[in-house]
Image (cartoon, rainbow, N blue to C red; front, side, top):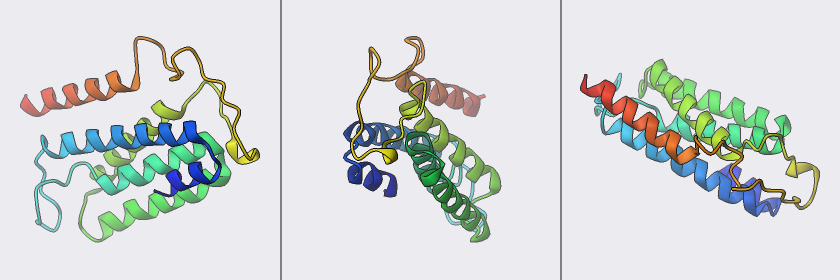
Length: 162
């Protein structure tokens, strides 16, 4: 939730909405996968090991901060995300592939919602100058973040059934 706090402290209202979208996308993807892929945890407590929700959240936040505000904010966030992933494996709550998948989901979700064909560094200004594109997503019309999340969910559901 640090990423949301940074957007609010910079009065970056567009960034706040984009982070909310990324947060929702990664959350929906993680919950869908946890409820379709039954993998026991290393400590044998539950069958919802894949993917790591903690990794997805922390890597989504790190990528959002990096893409939106640059490496000054992104580097410490990525260090924290990496430590979170390591601690989930070390505490035997997840396997490495759970953390890797969660990290990938988080990074992709944030990238889809923040990439604007060029970085806007709100950290360099007290307020952002908003220059949205036609639809405000920066994505080609054929591939919106919502469609990509749906596509990934459908492909993984088909993989589980086969």
